[in-house]
Amino acid sequence: MTEDDIATATGLPLHTWRRRHGTDFRARVPVINPGERMRLYDGAQATAYINGRPLPALPDQGPHPEDLLTDKETAALLGVDASTVRAYATTGYLPAGTERHGRTWWPRHVAEARLKAGDQRHHNPGRQPGDPRNRAPRPRHDPRITEIVELNNRAPLTTTDIAHRYGVSERTAQRLLAAARQHTGN
Image (cartoon, rainbow, N blue to C red; front, top):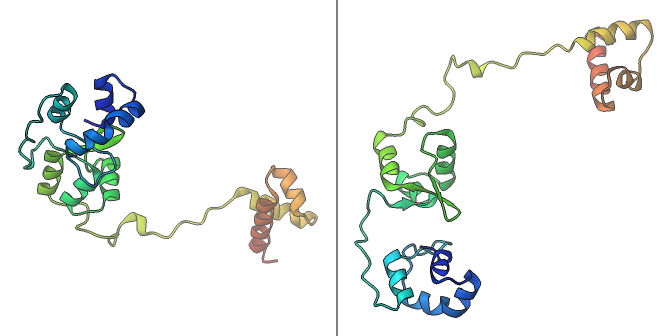
């Protein structure tokens, strides 16, 4: 549970709960995810505190397949950076995860399955010979250039003339005129 969940369970707004009970609660109930920005607490312990009962012992702290892991924890398990985990989720290499408390979480069993499957993405770094993406970009021919060459042969054109004729910016007109001059060798 988050502090927001606990405040809702007590029927108080979060800021009121924090002001009245937050300090005492944090002193008595341990955080289950130390070092993280969003504090999470065991639900059974939080409920016992709210009801004024003695706090039960924390459940077994060993890893459980259904544990929800943050991007940092998933990254540590996979041996990659947290941003890589988010990229994996975006590209489908890792499932999208579950949105809770304003964060994305991945079940431990999903991360472990990805780890056991091996990393098929990085065995072949870089592009290989024959990859069609290795070709140099093809020069693109702008049909306006041929037309500008013909018009410029009849009477000299200015960038303003070209900008008005084709409805382009002055910079584009300059580029077209330069390409037309280069095309004719002028």
